[in-house]
Length: 130
Length: 134
Image (cartoon, rainbow over all chains, first blue to last red):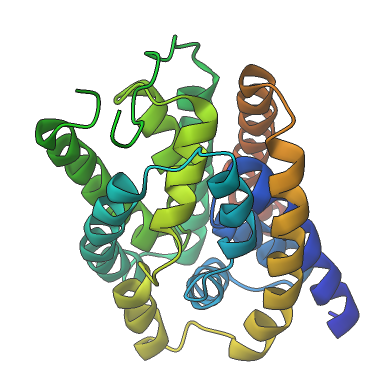
């Protein structure tokens, strides 16, 4: 895969990061598997490397200015995800790559279904110092 | 009190589960954290996304990354090439998002994920069938 193509891929992923408020790994993993031919484990490991860096910082700044951020809850989430991530990583490296890719697909579909469901947000829920 | 300590404990428990998925699938976890903040903790879509971005600033995947690195499942060079674009694109995407309606945002996101998910789910099956056919 040409290096310039990879840079462009990063840019496209970044736009999604900002629009969705996500880390981008969810797009990076399938892109690496299908565009650069990595196996599922290598793509996931490379994705984890990429998201070690605070890539959402630019997007966060935009949300912050619009007061759409709960800092306290965000920090609590970070701690929980650090611990859980260790466990998940241990499970994944021992799995067969093709099976892991299918599981990844199911995971994406589950996330999509969760997200599609209509919920009425409680006014001001999650607002800091509300 | 929308942000009481009891709520924060619930958010923490949610984040632990998200972390397991994050390590298992090599993703940041925002993709699960955002809908769960909306569905379980009744955040608005935008606030859930903003809060998720906070959680993704520290290297929450560090322990998971180390596990993959030890198993030689990391390509550092390609990783480094992807980073600058993500950073710049993120600013652009963030600007777009705060202008869009929360409902539409959620739906667009869900559609993209579902299509990607179906593709990923089927792809290994198709490949193994192709191998078997040979």
